[in-house]
Amino acid sequence: MFEQVTFLSNRKGGNVKDIEHGVGFYARIIHHQLNRNAEKNMRTLDLTRTQFEVLHFLEYAHKKGKQVMQKDIEEAFHISNPTVSVILNRLEQKNLIERVQGENDRRVRYIKLTPRADEFSRQLGDDIRNYEKKLLEGLSPEEIEQGMNFLQKITDNLCRNSEDDPMHDHHPYPHKKGDF
Image 1 (cartoon, helix red, strand yellow):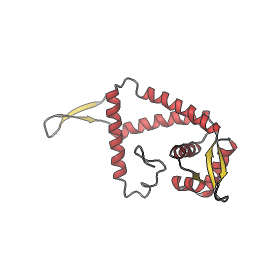
Image 2: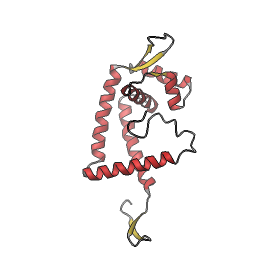
Image 3: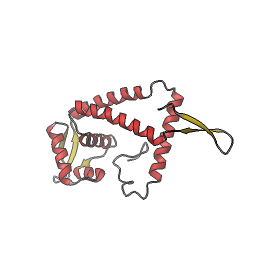
Image 4: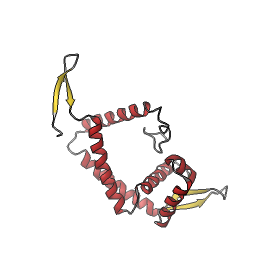
C-alpha cells in the first residue's frame, strides 16, 4: 500500500511523484499513531486527554513566566467555567495542581503545578523523547531537518489560510517557536 508510487511528467520536463495517497493520508496515519502512544501514556498516569492538555498548558505558561487563572484555561480551550472547574477539581484530587491566592488580591486564585505534576512531566518528557527517537529512526540529520522544514511550512500554510476559521487565533499553544 505505501510503496505504490508512479511517475508522471510535469510541464517542465522533469519527473513528479504522483503519490497514490497524498500528504493528508500520511498525516492521518502519523496522527493516529501519535495519539495511540499518547493515550497509552495518559492511561498509565491515570489522566484524561483534557487533563493532560491542561497540565501541558500550565507547564508551558509556567516556563514562559505566566501565572494562570481558571479564566485563562476557559478562554484557551473554549470550555465553560463549570467544565474547567471539574477538570481542575480532579487534577487537584490527584495532587497535580493547587489553587493559590494572589498576593495582592485575595480574590484571585492562580493554578500552579505541584511537584507530583513536575514528576509526571519529566516522565512524559522521557517517553516523548524515546518515541521521537523511534519516529526518526533511520533518518539522517539532513533528512530530519528537511522534514521539520516541510512540516513547519505546512503548519504556516494552514495557519495563514485559516483566517476564515473563527478558532485560528485562539489555539492554546503557538505554532511557532517563541510565540505565546
